[in-house]
Amino acid sequence: MEFLFEPLLQLLGEFIVNLILRVLVELLFRGLFNLLPRQLRPIVEIAGAAILGGLCGLLSVAMLPHSLIAAPLLRQVNLVATPLAVGAVIMLAGRRQTKFGRTVLQIDHFVYGNIFTFCAVLVRFLMAA
Image (tube, rainbow, N blue to C red; front, top):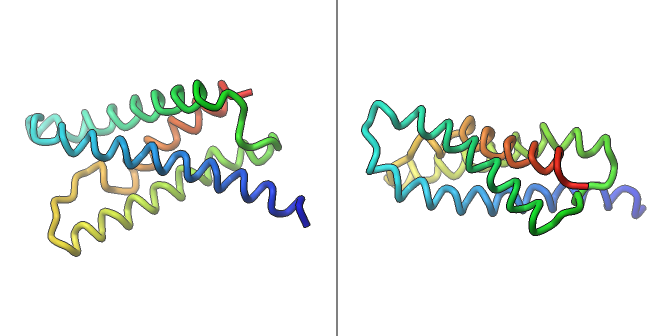
């Protein structure tokens, strides 16, 4: 029975770490949003999501140098599953903000959450032992 739960817990751990990092970046983007001209916002947000995702991946490798997922096949699945899951959570959070009348940024949409998390997971995939 343990062989079933261990891979699921590893994937869940990777998901939670990436979600926490994504929330921290969300707070940073909210602070910088009003400083940018309107035309540059989408370009800066896409590039920023990718760069900050990679930096968060590096930070997570520095804090946890070993991979949270032991099986090579699950590490490959994680490259797709975790960005999709975190992107979905970010999309739901954006919808909730809309429901309560708060400003929804581009970074609150699925694609941006997906880009950020994919870059973080990719760095961990390439660098974590």
